[in-house]
Length: 167
Image (tube, rainbow, N blue to C red):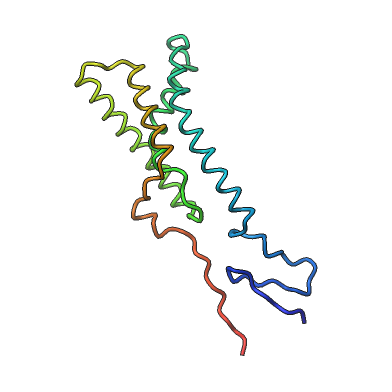
């Protein structure tokens, strides 16, 4: 019978079987960690650029779908996604969905605050409104993510140790 060994997270690996997974494969390996850490800055860079792309879309002809669709999507989701993403690894799909669903009301709240402030100073234009939201989104993309709501904090999947049955 081949000997068993475990990796750092307690998964058993056979040392006598040539098809056994190497210790470097798994959710905590250096390879998967580097792939995950490269994704977060790229995602944040894309989120920072969405506001400026929506602002650039206002140069297109009025009433064109290529003008209002990017602006609508940015105002509805851009700032909230920049504040909440990237999500920590290991969240269950329902917790990820909850955090993404929270991005829309957060974005719309920031948009309402920006519009109200611009109306109060008598400086509201579509260009200034989108530029202020794009600036907030860029700054939010550079900062760490906002802590998740209380309902998702404990929603991370945890690896349960395999009970020891040997005697």
